[in-house]
Image 1 (cartoon, each protein chain N blue to C red):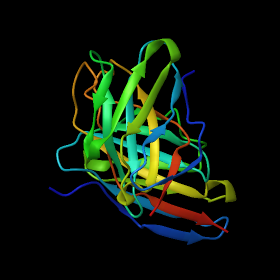
Image 2: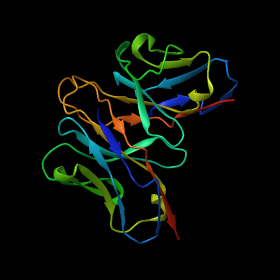
Image 3: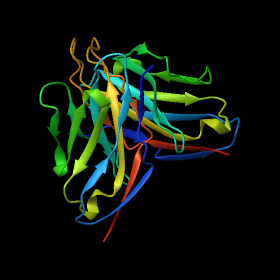
Image 4: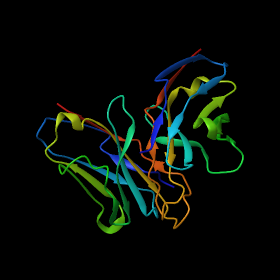
Amino acid sequence: EAGVTQFPSHSVIEKGQTVTLRCDPISGHDNLYWYRRVMGKEIKFLLHFVKESKQDESGMPNNRFLAERTGGTYSTLKVQPAELEDSGVYFCASSPFESGENTGELFFGEGSRLTVL
Amino acid sequence: AQSVTQPDIHITVSEGASLELRCNYSYGATPYLFWYVQSPGQGLQLLLKYFSGDTLVQGIKGFEAEFKRSQSSFNLRKPSVHWSDAAEYFCAVGPTFTGGGNKLTFGTGTQLKVEL
């Protein structure tokens, strides 16, 4: 079974440019999450999809970030225009949907490293 | 607001030595607790989790962790470290009831170096 895949693994762009990160979750996982790690800091939650719906986007830094999950399969995270402080590693994770009690495990991708110059 | 503290940013141990990575948390209620590991070039992998019951939990790769409610701690241990354990380790907390999802709060991570 394929794991969570993310593309690109590394992107270097100039300030003001646009970047789109893609995440393919494990097949059948309705939950999809985006997290970000800025260098030396903790991994922070950005948002959570259940299928194609945004369940929680409380962690999105500002309106330069746009996440989509059309059709409830893969997701994209677009940063437009990128700023220096957007540099970091963007992780995607998925999990199956379980109504009620938390079953715990998130399955993470390798991350997409974004460098804004 | 919930938070997780991993006070050790870097730790170096000799192969075969014992290991303890510290984790303290702040949460409104008793959370679910996790340890994840990220090896170079890989995604985060779940090592172990604590939900309830026995406060000493066993995980993969010979790791264990002990939940101490009175200290709000969930320290990770391994009796004998192998060179392949060199990686970054993350402690995380999550809600007990999620209505279907699991939003985690992570610590800043501890980078483990193993000397041969």
